[in-house]
Length: 218
Image (tube, rainbow, N blue to C red; front, side):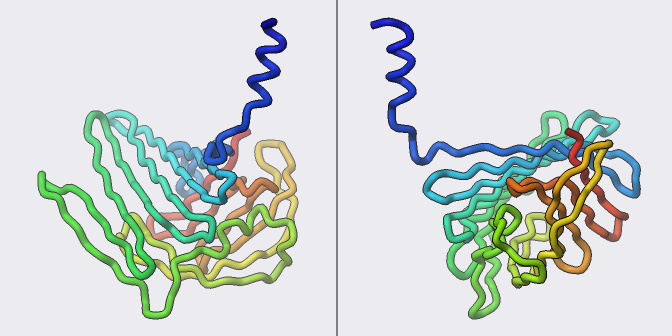
């Protein structure tokens, strides 16, 4: 068999339906305009509809680079199935895992060589499914659309309630490049701008420690 025929036959093989399609945005992170590190925001979607969002934070500290990696897994309805957060500085790695049922988050982590476990219940009659998960890439969405979301916070280890609203399409200039962006508000303190693929271009979070800004660098 010739090489060209072999390559053609490989290309015609059926693809794995669970093989994720990966999209990535590399961003500079600042606090009050002072650079503190980078964020890699990665989205993986399968043909079956499940979604994995990975956030890789890299910080330069006196003791060396520090990494915070958070993975969020959702089923095709937007319901969270599993969140994992890993903090690494030098050789030290801490991991916290949350698994979700229809009504609660079951969280496990290790502290002082002891495995700890807590369950955080959702408010009664509330669903954890995030109906806004695919909003950033939904070209049919109209400005003014709003939805209340319950999201599990891996910092506080508790559910956070906020409203997501679509502001509308805007022009966004970053590092001399102009993007067609879609602006969203997440609660009172967060503004997010996305591209047409649903990847973040810019994030602003107003917190007690200052204004956190992440901007795509290329």
